[in-house]
Length: 471
Ligand code: FAD
Image (cartoon, rainbow, N blue to C red):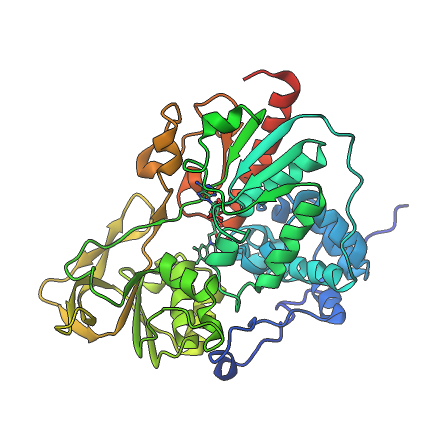
């Protein structure tokens, strides 16, 4: 008779992850969570119930074999675990840190019906960091070159993922990046206290070690058009992201001291404002900074403001806390650090000090009405509820869309609402033969893992196109 599997003892809560105390970390840009020790990681992985129909895999846009990697961590086989993760995901140290796991793999965990899910993201981060600590990352055996050349535009998570997958299939891949550093939002957007830049650099190096060539300071659409590139490459992939910020279009938005989150974070991260006085980056270090928006970008801006010396950092968000799109952990960390949430509030005007600098923000209070197209309850302004907040920096973080530069120089490239590039979602083919796209450029601002999932779909379709020549 088959032996009955012993019933597992349920551990209701996640193994806590040590982190920098809030009072200390607001004065530095060092990473907040320290990560698990091997013992903590094994204990956390042992919480997995090994259920027969794992919802965690279904919830992962790149379909990591989560139960397979958890069982290896539980047994202390960290090498086996990271090898398995990397079969599906070339950037695990990044996704382990920034994925909204609570809405994806962890949402599918059987445990979270009653208790806290297994800390899948924390364990993914652990195995990636464990591998990095062992020395140079081993490169898998690559097939013989196919002789086919693919150009990838943009070095964010979408571009890096498609490049890695195609290189592993033997194609010759070159990434073209407009900026002087590779990584996209991972380097210029997400601050180091959430994603240390050395980690992004390491993952970029891994992709390059697969044989991918990286050309920086190359703006496609200006330095070369897609048509010119198609003379050299058999296929192209557009992973150019959504870097064009939206503004509120309210009076006073052109005053000095008003930034888009994109500009504010680029100055802080890529131009190294956080290493003042070593780098004297031009950025206004306000005492009272108000960030408008409720997503991850807003949280990053508000938390960066504190680290750049603000005495007060405020989030102004038009809906309530439960509609905030930011990751739960980011909101929690922001509040721990002293960021104040001004909820159900919309800015209606900005006022200057007479010398061109912003001084006050006028806001109106909202109540929640019926759900809108996003499924979230719509903010409805309350008449005569206007009030003013003193500010000396305002960071606008209400969304972004793709830059129209490439579509403008490529008339056959079809774009849709919000300037997104239109693709066939099964193949990521655009309207132009030989050109594929994925990531924020097809969705508008979304997530790292969604960009990677689309890039993986594109890599399969590009490979087929290169082998068959069929469009
Ligand atoms: P990007 O990362 O934007 O990369 C596009 C790259 O293309 C850039 O390097 C750009 O310079 C380059 N490029 C653009 N145009 C050209 C051109 N014409 N020629 C050459 N190169 C070009 N997502 C999460 O999952 N979790 C988070 O916690 C999270 N936090 C975020 C915080 C911030 C501040 C921001 C801005 C975004 C955040 N996101 C987060 C969203 C996530 O970063 C994006 O969804 C993801 O980076 C999209 O990847 P991508 O490769 O499509 O584009």
